[in-house]
Amino acid sequence: GMTPPALSYHMAFTGNPGTGKTTVARMLGKIFKNLGITSSDKFVEADRSALVGSYIGQTAPKTLDVCKSAYGGILFIDEAYSLADGGSNDFGKEALATLIQEMENNRDKLIVILAGYSHEMGRLFDLNPGLKSRVGTIIEFPDYNVHDLVEIFNGTAKKASYHLEEDAQDLVRDYFNDLVQNKDRNFGNGREARAFFEKLTSTQASRVVQTRPDDIFA
Image 1 (cartoon, rainbow, N blue to C red):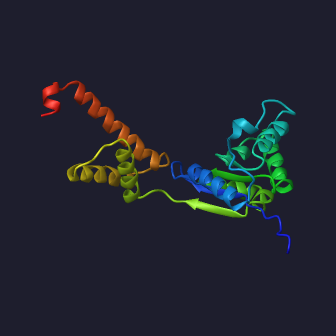
Image 2 (cartoon, rainbow, N blue to C red; image 1 turned 135 degrees about the vertical axis):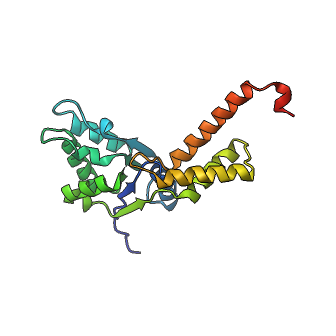
């Protein structure tokens, strides 16, 4: 018969692009709704441009409106660290202050998930202890390995009704192995698998256009 306390479910998803942060956040929205933690599976995506105004007095109401639009569900803020990247006169800090207030005062109305690069998000929390204290869970999304990328590629191909022979599988595996070994900051993880599939289908289409119909079905 005890009344359960109002817990805070605010989170931070850290990691490189293409690691599934947005996808997992959407899934959590449905899970929280099924568990009765949120009243709906509403999922609102926002970034700096959606929260920060261009003149004095515009930012706080703008940020508040975005927060209210997510009441009952999840507010997902991508590249959240960009709110603290500006100078002393940047309006991003005002948006951050408004967001922190909403996370504290209305934690029973919305769940905020902040997302971005690991290093930049760590710096954001170092600069804003008040924000860090309101984020109960930080989840690191690691880069995909070669096996992961091949699996994503094959899943994408299967959905498009493509089947790769074993020799082709070896070439795909070699491609991603080279990609992972030489990755840089711009490495797109799952996006790399989808982009490679699109490149191959485009190449195939060009080849088919230049092939006689009799040869295609030979």
